[in-house]
Picture 1: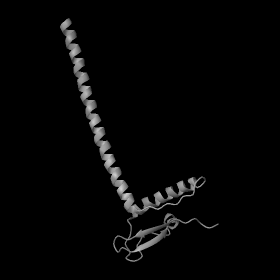
Picture 2: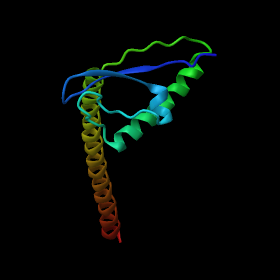
Picture 3: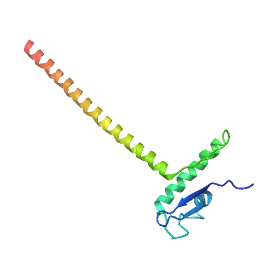
Picture 4: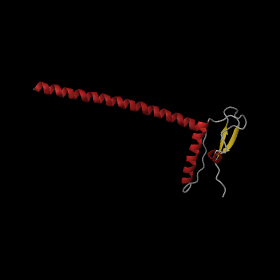
Length: 126
């Protein structure tokens, strides 16, 4: 039975040359992300994370394959744009959460003042 292939096209940022690697070879460790033209190498930690993501993606595609055939094209520029949008959304959410926390603190202070006012009224009644 032939092994399924998932090839990945890379373009070196240093020399702008293109090359292709088989994802399974990356996963098995028989290939490294190295430009065959200028020997530029991907850092080991990034390669490890990339291989882990490939392994997970391959497992998920295999699970989907029972119901759907999967064909995918992904451009790194598109991913960068999406990540930038996600980071902006995360910053907006953080600011909103901080505002909510401030609002909650303000409400707590108001409640506390009301409690003190009630105690003062009780003292006056006595």
